[in-house]
Image 1 (cartoon, rainbow, N blue to C red):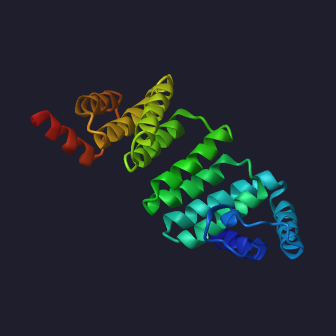
Image 2: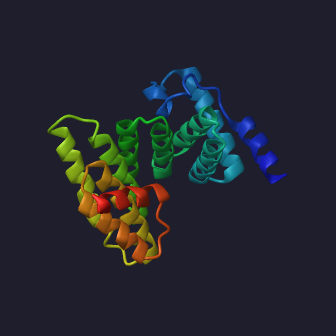
Image 3: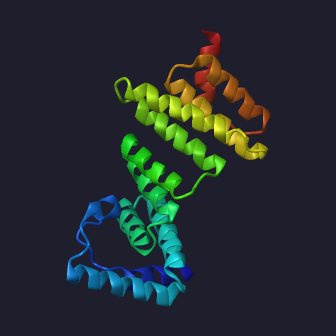
Length: 218
């Protein structure tokens, strides 16, 4: 019943925008008087419902991720855009955009969104691991010197992230790091990171285990 209420709520609040298919409405100029009026009406209604634009933005991000998990990516993009309209400083908006780009194998665009999230002060160690992996996945698609620059940046981010005292989070970081190492053919490092993740109690992906076992055999 609660889910139904929230679906009705979002339908009632959601404004009609010209380009919901791209992050941040595709960079569309929002100075048009009619569009501004619709934006303000939407924001005012959202504040009346959620209390503040910041809280409303969080609610729309949550709705976006729920839609994403249901493979309703058009709706997810719409919700993330609305969350962005409500609070452009909400870092999780950019995570949402990045996740959608990643799903469609647009790794460099996803990296740009994760970078924006990081610039909005999102710097938790598990996020940094995700950011480093996306940066690696973008880097391997590029030519030199851009490739080496991004791979070096990713390595630095992993080294920063692993400083966390939280073993559970550190295990997640090593698991992510092993995946990145495999992408750039750093066999010994991938094996080492996999073992570290396992030693901290992380359930390593079967595919990662198989790849590291193959490296050990070879």
